[in-house]
Length: 166
Image 1 (cartoon, rainbow, N blue to C red):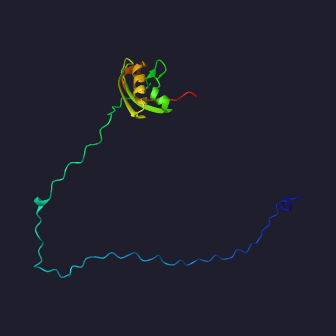
Image 2 (cartoon, rainbow, N blue to C red; image 1 turned 180 degrees about the vertical axis):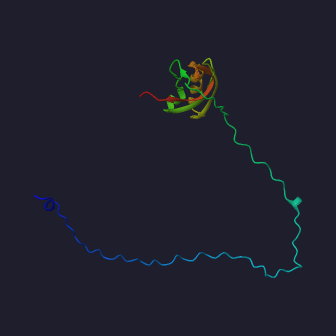
Image 3 (cartoon, rainbow, N blue to C red; image 1 turned 120 degrees about the horizontal axis):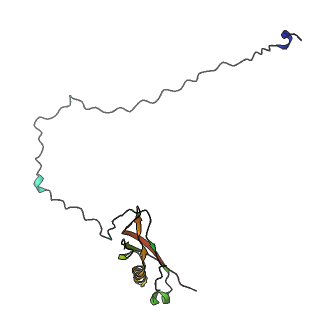
């Protein structure tokens, strides 16, 4: 076999239809902005009434923001941990009424792990559960929070669950 026999060139001719350009409609005209004319007739004898600013009443300052427990944020690396489980005493009135739920208590744990301040963030009023939760938190000792290996006092929110045994 010669080199000419091996190299066969095949040329195919394909008819490609000519493309047509579609004419698009022109974009809509932009809305016109009215411009005030300088030739408008203004009466020279037209005057404006004087404005009496003293007749306006003085506005009161806005009301102060609602008061509530003011929380000071203190950053920490490791949160305080209770040394013993938090075990609240279930109030007798809540047991008899069959009331269950969760009371969220905010507490300040100082750098020695003692509870200094306690307040209810979200509770169940008139059942004794709020008071029982706060008392249980007050009695609990904590391992203090750590900030860069130093003990610091911090505010934390603690959920206290009340569930009846069947």
